[in-house]
Image (tube, rainbow, N blue to C red; front, side, top):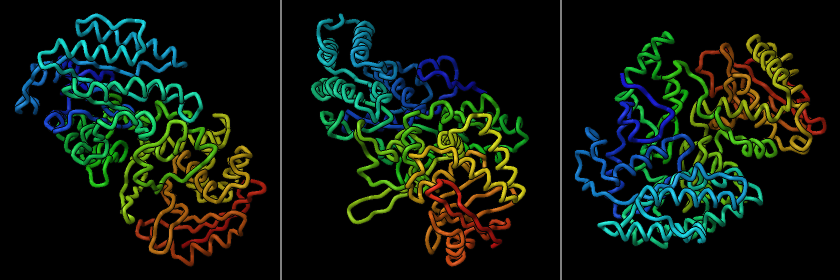
Length: 519
């Protein structure tokens, strides 16, 4: 059984040390064969972008010995060697533009040294030094061409998103990346990767030469693992994981799918599994929140704390999904591009395509909503933990009076500017986040033949179908559940169903009353 590494993204290290490598080189060969030679690819963090860049670097350095037995080795690739400029922008994030450009200059010096040429003059701007480096290497190349690989192009400014401070970083990056267009004729191949796709009036205004393969169906599984790839490359690891947890390989696979699968980068594409989460699951022998618990961006939580939205069933137009401005954030677009939401489906409305979004899997859904609920409630960890225990126990015991006492406590601690004059949807979003925080599976905006249920949540014993109203009687909410027969949507799950009508009081910013009855 080959070992798994989750700490290296260097292709040569994986191969030389005998780690598992899921062969993506057949798709890479197709990318190299394509008529266009300059590409952009966006994917969520820790999804294999750096490994892809490292693999391409080895290909263009002509290191064929590393690819023995892989698909590209048996292909018609010519294995010509080229000078490769590899810029890992993930290591250049700094507090000021001046500090960033100093770090960038050091990186350019290192790339010159790695390729055996003198660094460009130190008194030049980074963009000018970048262009001089490209031209120097192209002049030494047998083909007159170089390869440009820019990894995590957006990392230098992600920590400033949504603030005025992002603009100087945006402008500096725009100047620097314009060299990719200026030196287009000197490139055999170029790839720019990142998390976000900023709009064409921003960083990409000078990069219309890049072909965006982010949502091309043929490259949708270039990063991440399909279920077939997991079966082919990790069967022994799946069996070992199952033995440790008392599960059959089939049941272990089912849990892997539920926890870590679900990312889709085109409406018709196959879903893929997060590679880092899967590797950590195998290494630790248990299912936990690995990817999303490491870094839910603080600015995202801050945005959603001020403007809660129901994320499940959220929609975005094609234009909104594709790009946004770094100083004018669209929360749902940002959540999609960073991997907290994924494509669930799409429909065409005239000339405009609209995408339906949802959380990709249990790992992301649980951990993200838990973080949000803590931010909403402003409770200390000990108090929050006690409230969570009481709420779970009450729901399991069908003690709705105690459950709604806990809900009132949580809402009472929310800041005034969040709930004052808030529409019904804000209370709905907070309620669903709280339910996931306590470990109760909840779905919002569950569509039926006669409307959408505000929330359906489920315990080991019961299913609750809830309708929420703001400044209206709970009976009005309950009457809507009855009239539209929302219970029929969950009637076949084999558990008792309870109908709930919940009224929120906007003046006091909490649960005013609730009513329940069996379906």
